[in-house]
Length: 204
Image (tube, rainbow, N blue to C red):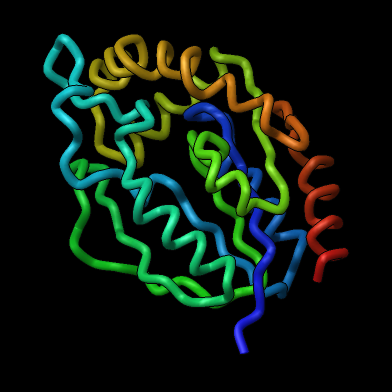
């Protein structure tokens, strides 16, 4: 018999510390059957031409950059207690690898991503909704270090992408998601992670 799981959404701008926050929550839960699902895994393999910038670059910070149909289906399946095959995305080539990762079934799923609170159907599946609100300078610096070190990007390309798409898309689409959050977390996430993990333990 399949058992419904506890689903938490963690939204915030690029570099706000979503993965770090979620990892702290998981650590606090110790041996609990929990999985961290990254929205980045659901980037479309081919980005819509309509979203390209004036410089001919795809806009990865627009809502239409994601495979919403597959994402809704997978979250719904996880919520029902089923397993899914999560696509694996390669940031160096900005495309799906064609391989998959088996996820679930599990008791708790932390779903993190820049648009994890954007879609109404997904919001309705979430048991708790969090938003990480961090100063733009901090987010930019974190993104710069991450993309150069971990994703093989050049310094110039990261800076260009930030001003072309990251910053304007944050102001237009990402920041308004705060209105849907059950609580907002700042740069200091230790206390918030303890509170969230305690709420999850209550559910379990």
